[in-house]
Image (tube, rainbow, N blue to C red; front, side, top):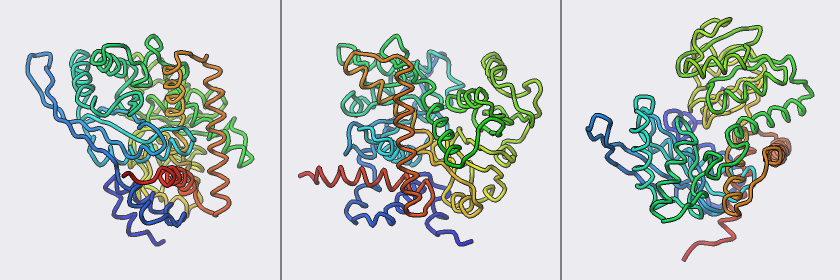
Amino acid sequence: MAIDSRATKSADNTFAMAQYQFDQAADRLQLDTNLREILRTCERELTVHFPVKMSDGSIRVFEGYRVQHNIARGPAKGGIRYHPAVTLDEVRALAMWMTWKCAVVGIPFGGAKGGVVCEPKKLSTAELENLTRRYATEISVLIGPDRDIPAPDVNTNAQVMAWIMDTYSMAAGHSVPAVVTGKPLSIGGSEGRAEATSRGCLTVIRETAKRQGTALPGQTAVVQGFGNVGAPLATFLHELGVKVIAVSDSSGAIFNPRGIDIPRLSRYKSETGSVARFMGTDPLGQAELLELPCDWLIPAALENQITRANAPRVRARVVVEGANGPTTPEADAILTERGILVIPDILANAGGVTVSYFEWVQDLQSFFWDEDEINAKLDKLMTRAFSAVSAIADRHDIDLRTAAHMLAIDRVAEATRTRGIYP
């Protein structure tokens, strides 16, 4: 099997991977050279180094980023992650993917992303708040309800968003709830936001099963990453009669071929902080988890999990990308050749940013919808996006990732073309 040399070069660099995916779709679209030049680069990149007072009285300097890839279709939108492996190239890639994700589901946002290089699990609550507030102050030159709206991502949550919202509001002199999404309900958060990414994944799984003429009850699923996305999705699948046979988190992986009791596992993790040693399961290597035979493999952790090295051993029928960038371009080619369907991240996990859009709209108008209405709107948009991407894939006889990128890039290119180049 021939592997594109550009895919090989992108294997160790997340932003190169994002650009490679862009180039593949741009080739198909026969995109104008000038538009390619604009859309394959990021518009704004901010790197900050800021001091934080620690609980023992010492001062530590942390490094953080905020990147805006494109704002042709509206304000920038994207999460903030806290992780020791955060890099500027990773944030660039995530910002680009956010642009395409928003365009795929048709919401009026551009793409952004942020991150701080840290290990949040080793920080006290006070240290985490100090870090968040100082980071928010540093990036306040970019963020705002009509400019750039952050949200939770890896190792950040509603409380972190509350601290950012409060910090920004104190500087403004009045409350600005629309500056972030994913907030607690008490300060302008939206019903349904916490589980939105998982519900969006569930919609594309349901629509894929319909398209394939199969019934979900009795099928098997493996979930890598029993966290903000993976845990609710595992619960939804369990409720639909899908056997979740293996899950993992940062502490390890567990396996039961007869299916794991997901509600009990969720309670166990809330009590112990991990899935390891859950009763009735066997321990499993993290690498082994991705190679189990199953109907649905859902990588919902970090990037670069399915690579050229392990793709030949993946035995799932469908890979659903709950995480951003879990499959490298080399692995994509291998999975496609082997007949394994991949539902790409910019479609599969777009539910989170879709309900973030709903939250932003509700904050701006100070009028809120109930959870049933939120979930119905989400399902409608995700179903429509899945149908549009599938139609392009069928028409051009291509994989879903290229089809999703073609749809998104064409929409952003049209907005850029219509607005023109300033001055």
